[in-house]
Length: 283
Image 1 (cartoon, rainbow, N blue to C red):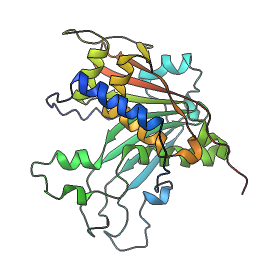
Image 2: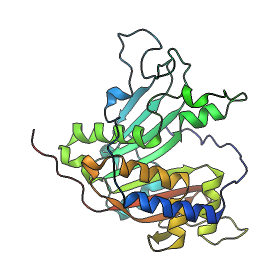
Image 3: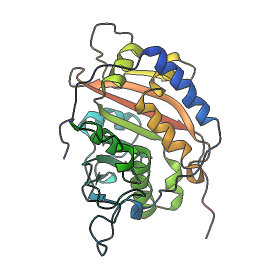
Image 4: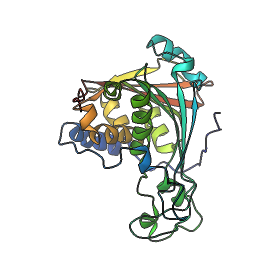
């Protein structure tokens, strides 16, 4: 159920100062105007079965109800009182079909993959695998010059993960559950830029970062928090929050934990949210 990380060795291009500066920009976004995403429903991902090939959205969604959460997070789930076992839904979104966007019809699938555990009772999302369409296209030997015009309409991690969260939350509980999201884990971080910032936040120098749960915790007033927020793994959390004010209101981020498993080989994050979401109005 848990495929090995798709780790591509890349040079580190994000400096500490750049990460801190970008983190400051992200804090500004959290305090600014928020606009609801136009992609909110499962139908924005999945292609209907009764349309010509290459004219849909190109994603397929597979679900394993009652999927076991990653063993790496057992201690964290216990400490945070997040239910395990049957409370988890393991959902995989694959960009594995020909698709249409506003420029082209019949585009080849990007082989993008987002897999998440949705735990509504625990107010928790675990992002296991996040291989975006843009990343998959840019890993090709020959990257098309117009590659941005070859992306599916839903291509951001924040949109795909939100659709999965909202779909399960609305089906399993009351609509209020959608707005109660509190914890977002990032599992097995493989991007060298983010791992480098984690190492520097932990002040380990040339040594490998190796801190089991709860690892190290940083709050918004810490420079380390700002640097971690400035990585792509922090930006994606901000994207999710500012793109869904209808449900999440002005929710923000309270803290981030960085920790490891497997003797320091696997890096993880936990972003803890704060603030109240919006209570849905009766229809």
